Amino acid sequence: MPIGAQYLEVAAHLADVCRSCGRDPHDVKLIAVSKTVEAPRIQEAIDAGAHVFGENRPDQIMDRHARYPHEEWHFIGNVQSRRIKDIVPCAALIHSVYEEHHLARIERAAQEAGKVQDILIEVNVSGEESKGGAAPQEVPRLLRATEAFDHVRVRGLMTMAPQGDLDVAERCFADLRELRDRMRVEWDSPDAAFLSELSMGMSEDWERAVAQGATMVRIGRAIFSEDFA
Ligand SMILES: *Cc1c(COP(=O)(O)O)cnc(C)c1O
Image (tube, rainbow, N blue to C red):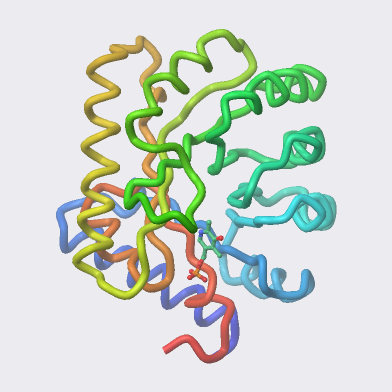
């Protein structure tokens, strides 16, 4: 199926799943993860109505943001200190922040770019060693650290679930939501956008994530791969 048709199918399916769990489809943002395709293929998704994209490499988000400046670009990859200055001017949202020492660099880059950088804290809910993210118990310390920076705004939490067992994945999504809910009570922030976002769910497991309160799903293969079943 062409990319445009795959995008439309995922978008329609997402709206159905939202309705079936009593949620408004407008409350869940579909992020088309374009990291595996050549840049010109992205146009096919744009033509079908995609306007929010996820990239995991600094060079790629820079290139694609320059090529398609009217679309919304999210950085979902591993953050490295020396690339923060490259990512910040392109990224509407950085999903994958979990090192305290990156915050000062993001602050400086955002100030230079004349913006407030929205970020999510990536949480390693499952504790798998191969995964990035802060341990759940480190999240309060990270949130406290962000308070020192005027150009960094924490919009929520992000996680990647273990692959292979959807019930395990769903438990992980529920745990992230519970952590977010606890942090919101603890912080009692006057900013309604504070921790309002939950970025969770990928091609294999996004339906479970939506059921557990995801406000953003990051979908790559189901949109861009020819052989995702
Ligand atoms: C690649 C990637 C995705 C998309 O994964 P698919 O399984 O292709 O949908 C989502 N989130 C992150 C962080 C990724 O690196």
